Length: 165
Image 1 (tube, rainbow, N blue to C red):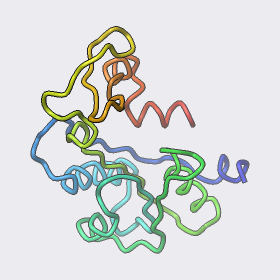
Image 2: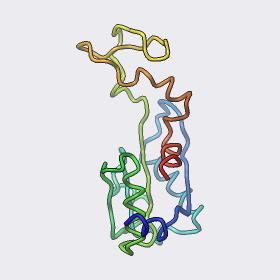
Image 3: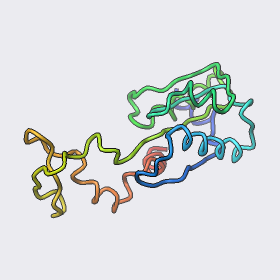
């Protein structure tokens, strides 16, 4: 199957929405912004899109309704390829002719507070020597090494995608 994927599909367009913390901009708006850019970059129109593969916070049905897309293929699950699963799924769909043009997107509301510690939580030394808050009940904060990850440029999806492809 890998040979089919390598020879049967390409990434033809890329889009990126505005980025910021606590912008107040809805995830759907940001997704539509980046998806529209990707479609234009590929030289397509929304009516050309016949598949969507995604991971993230913006439901495919909402994106389809906003862009006027009626895909025959909707996919997206965290599979054996981790965060790259939607990309691999799109490649397989095109390579096996289940779809011709697949929009892949990932909407993430970073630092929205879901994994950050409660206000007033204790702190401890994190990897790299910084002081990072701890989660309740003594569990380590999963975001404790975020500074180091950002510095290493490893926390951006485009970098993960480039590394895996």
